[in-house]
Image 1 (cartoon, helix red, strand yellow):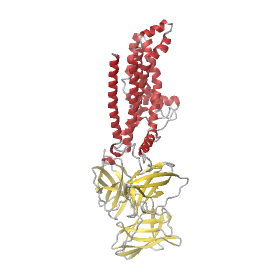
Image 2: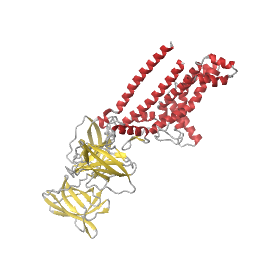
Image 3: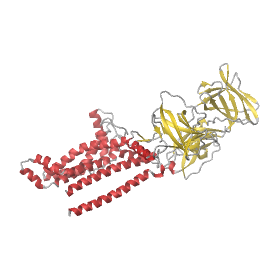
Image 4: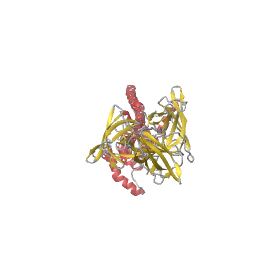
Length: 640
């Protein structure tokens, strides 16, 4: 009979394990869905996808599979835009929407239906404003995040779209001469510092270069006298070129040309102030690139793979931090793959942006990918490193990574702080629950009278029926203030609080299963022990507990599984800080807390989304193995 039961148990166990493995692979498949998994997102070299960084007119929106509506209040120089002005939205350098400004009760409002694919959720949307009266394009200060769950802003509460610096004109200035000339004399400065001889200023009408002037010194004043070509009075905007820094800066000042006349003089020049602030819009990385020198830098070696077949001869990849060039590398090719390995001078926790110089078109193109610095280490992987090694390294860094900052740029997805938080809270709960649970089981089974047993056992089992949110509320409203008072703490939501509450919740499981295991010890063993002269406590400690140890161990393992999988309590009382704690009075963020608290605010398909599924897979493996071991241990006791 026992042999039949054992075979039946094994069949049920193996079937459950098979379905569990299938379910687990389903979770893993969802992590890998759509080619942006958190585990494999940076295998190989960094995916450097190029695009033209330009908000130049005309704007032609690119159609995509879906759209998101955005309501923007449009301001130019802190004044409402006019109904002739336009606003455009850009994702990865592509124009995705264009809208005319409308006047609604004195508010300049633009409604844009931004074209996007579902897989682009979470990407940054940049805006540009076209000032019809001056024929000028401005980058807009501020950005938005693509979210398919809701509109961006509302009619009554739109997002702000305020003009920043003018669109920067790339360095390749070619004068277009036609019409009559307006001669202007201007003084030039950069961010409040006077320009030097040799610097240049360019005049632009409708994005065409109509004049270039070199800076010369007159009595210590940097002046540029040059002509602007045109057929009629038009608005001219300017960019200045700082020769020493090899950078192009925008100019907020503008003039109306007057053909066949002069504007300004040596004694009374026009003021032109170069401004390096770019208003959060597109970054123009002007050529040539000269890496700056910084104090005590460390090198981050970046391995990149470009998505375009860029000519190798003369083409370069540049790395930029805060607009400064920190590294330049020649483009190479390995087989059909275009590669670049670039050493980047860096400090910790800096964001690296990239640009590519295409020698065939003599144009600078932006890169839609960015990464953080890793001083002394690598970003991406060497093309000579096998994928198996890369995968194992990535898996290890994911599980044992110490930083969980999913909203940083780029996101950091180290699970280790969350795993440590879960285990510390769970072990603390077991430290409380095991003595009380096993002790109550011994008392109910061996010591309590039948009447007392009928009172205590239902009370303990009643604890299992209380909703976890009630426990969490008790921890927040009652236990947290007590801990703050007793231990002189600034906050009472910490490991100790969560361990106490979880320990109370786990006591019924350990007590009930341990009591069953103790009750299954044959009565003859008790009588034999008493017959040999042992007292009650000697019998309990030396005979009953060793005989019931497999059942007690099984109850502890089930209690562990219950505690490590608890969600609501740890959200409410563990504190929520993703860090390695230094004491039981510090807050932590267990795995279940991270999943429950962050999943609802995470855009579908993003790295953060996949990372949460990765945590779920780790948590599932832990709870499944714990429950399986518990069942095997408990079954061993029954068979024995």
